[in-house]
Length: 612
Image (tube, rainbow, N blue to C red):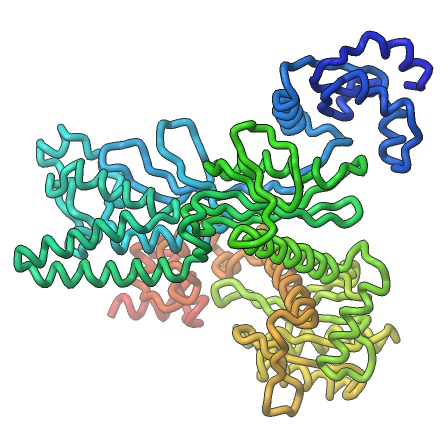
C-alpha cells in the first residue's frame, strides 16, 4: 500500500484507542499493534521514512488494514498480546521460548497424591507452578516426602472402600513414609493439613510449616513421647537448613516480580526473578527476536505479560529498570535507586548478562553459521590447551559400540574448521576381531581408516580423539606405528568418566577446566560420535545386519530365535543352557540344532547321550 492509497482511507480510521492489524495480498496477518489513537499511530507508518529495512518491508506488503476499538489503553494492550500469541504474526516480537515446564499436581481424588507432570489438563486437580527446573522440582518433592508423609499408591481410597476394609498398608507405611489412610489410620483433616504445609513450602513460606512442627514437638514432649519429639526436632533442623539454602532477600519484601532487559541488535534478553515472601523462588531468562526496532520499553512490557502469565504470578508489584506500560492497572511499578529492591534488580542484570554470554558461547561452539574468526578462536584455544604443534582444523574421533555385549562396531566422525564434515563420517563393521574386545576393535578401526587415507594420499587430521582410556589409546597407537604414521598427527584418549585427556606415553592425564571452550568442543565431538555410532548400530540391527547369531543356525528361523531370546534374554545364556532346557522351550529337534552349533557336537553324540 502506497502513501497515496493510504490517504484515501485515513479518514475512516477512528481516533479512539484500539488495536490495528495489517494483512498482505493473500490475507496473511503481518502485524498486530496497539495505539492510544488508531488514526495517528497507523498514519505514522505511511508519513515518514523508516531507517529499518524490516519496517519498510512491512509497509510495502500491507494490502488491507483492520482495526478494533476498545475502551482503554490497557484493554488495547491485553488484546494485542492475546492476538500476537494466537497468530504469531511475522513482523511482531517473537518470544523464543518453546519449552514445556513442569508442574507439581495435587490430584483431585480422596487423599490426593502429589507428583511432577508437564501436562496441565482440566481435570479439577490443583497445579502448582510451573517451575523452571525439573531437577529442582524433583528435589523439592523428595524433600517434602521426607517430612510430610503422603501416599504414593494409586488405590481408589473412597470412604466406602476404606470402610469395607479393601486395602492393607504397604511397606511405605512401615517405613514411615505414609500414615496409612487406606486402613483408616489417617483422617482427611490430618492429610489436608499436610497438603496445606506443602502449598506454603512451594510458595517459599516455611514459617507456618516450622511453627506446625514446633507445636507438634512440644505436644509430644508434654506427653512424654520423647522419641517422637526427637524425630520432629530432626525434621525442624532439616527444614531450617533447607530454608538457609534458599535465596532469601528480605522478609519484609513480600511478593515481587523483578525484570531486567538486555538488548543486542535484533535480539533482546529478559530476566525474571519471582520473589515470594522475600525469597527468590523462580528465576528464568528468555530470548526475544525484535522485528521493527521496538524500543526497550515495548519489548520489556511484552515479556512481562507473557512471563507473569506463564508462571502464574501472584505479585502485585513489578520492579523494573525504567518505566513500562503495564496491562493491569492494579499492578504497581517500582524503579529502585537503592535498598533491597535495587539489589534484586542488580542480581537480575547479572543473570541476564550470564545467560547472554552462555548463549553466545554455545552458539560459537556449535560454530555453524558463524564467522571464520569465531570458529578459529575455539580452535586456537584447543591448540593452546593441548599444546598441539599445529592448529587442529581437521579433527577426527573414534568410538566403539556394541549391543548387550554382542555385535561390535566402530564409528568415526570428522570435524573440519570446527564444524561437522558429515560426508567424511565413517562406520566400521568389525572384521578381524572375535567376540567383544574393545582394544582390538579400536585398533582395527584406526588401522583401516588411516590405511585408506595413506593409500589415497588424502590429508591426515591434526588431532585424533580416541573415546576411551589408556588401553584404547594404546591400541590405536599400535595401528599408527604399523602404518609408519607416528608423529604425523596427535592422538589423545578421552576417559569416559572424568573427562581426562591422555597422551601416548604420559603417566599423568590433562584435566581441562570444566567450562573451558576447548573441553566443550571436545565434548561436543565426543557426543556426536556417540550419536553417530548408536544410530548406525540401531539401523544395522533394524535392517537385519545383526540378526542375532541364533538365526545363523541352519534350521532356526526368526520366530524360534525370538522365542529363545525372550526366554533366556541373551545369546550367551542360550549357549549356557542345557539340552533339556532348550528342548522344553523349542522342542527336541531344534534343541539339537542349537546345542550342536554352540558345542560342536554331532547329532549322533546327542542321541547317544540321551540313550544312555
